[in-house]
Length: 265
Ligand code: ADP
Image (cartoon, rainbow, N blue to C red; front, side, top):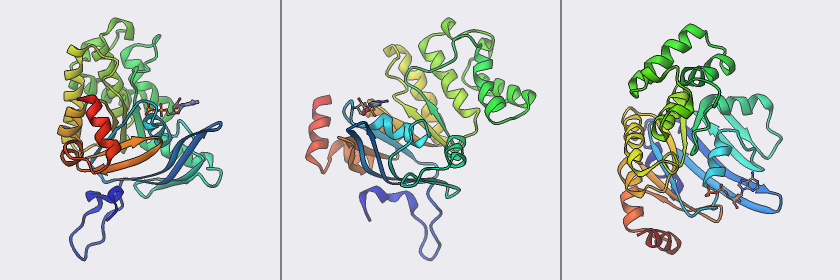
């Protein structure tokens, strides 16, 4: 078993393993002459939580953006739930990129809410405009989700009237409202004041317990240890090591991982 195929696809003997929710093979990306991703392989099973850790500039955000179709990779394949496969070795069809965007939703470091729209309008925009769902249905679902994160009374507020933690909870609700198969988080707490980090991490932990499949870029190693089912250490655009969080964070097999973790202690 390769490190990138760790326990995600396990099935009883004789039973065909279900397709992993996310399968990435040989993903590569350059910006001009800067080779940012070098043949990334990742497999994430349904209901599993992968934490991507690594130094700044190592390519973690670019991986997420390729998974969400916000960046178009130069080579490799991304497949979600066996339903959509993009082969970046060929010019990906527009339809396929849309398929990728439809199946994943991103939570951004800086929330990326529309400043001129209310909380409710921010949440229902995607379901109505992008997915063509009826306004009444999208609104009812948005209000239920806002209630769940304790923000029902902020439905008519604008983002500037909210704390960072509240804005990020709206960002998470906005992602959930798209009913994605895969949730992507890009350092979801690194813009928050320390006292607001806990609420957001608790919400993400609840989503993990509910069985959402997630890829999370994070510097919160304690959170990764507690919530992730697997951790990948990214450095220089490659996955240096991928494995069980407790094992990898305490006792990495690669010297580069060891040095990175040491610097954080
Ligand atoms: P990380 O998330 O690990 O901090 P990033 O994926 O943001 O790393 O960046 C990886 C590298 O790609 C960095 O060298 C960064 O400067 C470069 N990069 C990221 N996005 C762009 C872009 N849109 N244009 C040019 N270079 C980029």
